Length: 284
Image (cartoon, rainbow, N blue to C red):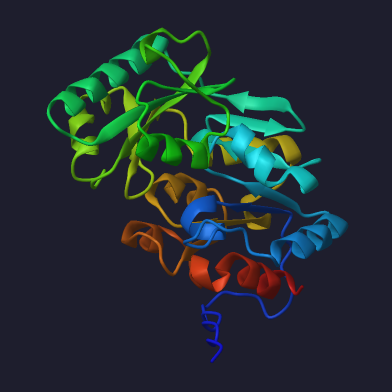
């Protein structure tokens, strides 16, 4: 028997007719992608129709720019990629904005991870540069996770000595990142952001860096208002981005804080919540 898809949520404030949306920004994992990390098939014809209408579609992710560009390779022309949790924004291969870290801070985060590993925590660091991501840990379980998000990555002997502009340090915690790794990084929170971006990932970035800052910069550059912006997210690294749009949607599967922060609720990532909500609000 074929399962019946979850109904669109009847949320007050949705328009009776098409809304004047000029920019759609969506998180990837847990939001646009289903739990098997697949892009819904219906996205590709939708992107063609959005392009015809002059609506810009922008993925906003903790994923690397090279990874996002590969995922959207056939439709990437003119698309803005808000990569690395907003620290690196690129359109047609041209950097629009970035927020680089002091490499000495990135190195100290990496050394903190080494101490956690020595204490028995199953964690590894990914030092994220503009050109590539850099890792020391070489076991297949770790590298399999790295490959999901960082197609341009290098295994190096010492991540504290990489020659690249560092934009973020990401940590993969195979336990519960919110309970183990994030508290161990609390000392960096006085000067930097320590963001739990999923159950197993924590990102350390400049205090000024987040998806919301990147989105507001993009809105200014394009002359698009928050009232013309639709945003979708599911986890804590999406909060500031939700604040930058009047049409902000938490997925039904979202972290409780994201649900509280968003103006509206969309069906879950496994129920094509992004596509179905865009179709309804824009009258596609």
